[in-house]
Image (tube, rainbow, N blue to C red):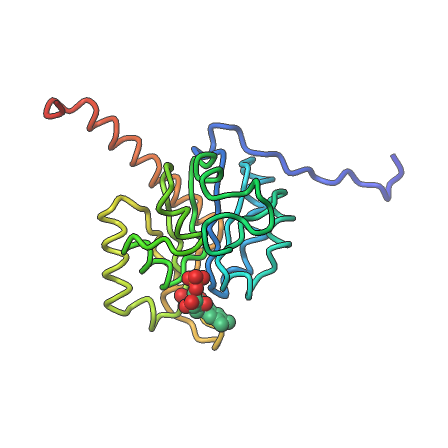
Length: 217
Ligand SMILES: Cc1cc2nc3c(=O)[nH]c(=O)nc-3n(C[C@H](O)[C@H](O)[C@H](O)COP(=O)(O)O)c2cc1C
């Protein structure tokens, strides 16, 4: 091989046992952190070796191109047309995606989506997917610290946790377009997957403990 041709290092997917979910449905809401979704989807797809699909809110499509997410995931995305069915592709409907997924990652999750999910509202494609989910659902909140620390948002987070959803604690960092740093920033994808793995492992351990409990009838 000529000296100027070097073998490019190839990304090797991690072994199938490395991450417990293999089919990840990403729900993208209208936070500025949505711009991190295409590289995160590529990481999950090519490094973790998961299959990734996505559903976007209308606000999300104002902040990130659905096409870039479709390219990053390698699949058409579910866009909102008001009834949970994808306007762009009749085969991409909420029930197909929620039945397919073994994990739903709401990333980024806006204050609005946290509130709607806590109240059981399903008035667009993303919130319909959350309510129709048959897999574990993990929220990755992203907002500025003024929003994150509001009692209403914290109440909604507490309700979601009580209902069995995972809610990843946000990082301290740049969360707002005003350039101010504070609590509420979206953690990077590796931190998200580490946290999610612990959540899924705890769910399995909790389920097994409950199944073997003598109190179970
Ligand atoms: C440029 C821009 C950035 C925004 N970033 C955030 C954010 O980081 N977090 C958040 O909760 N809302 C953010 N919002 C407000 C949401 O987009 C707004 O509440 C919207 O109704 C959310 O809709 P959705 O939850 O259906 O996506 C932002 C709005 C704009 C215009």
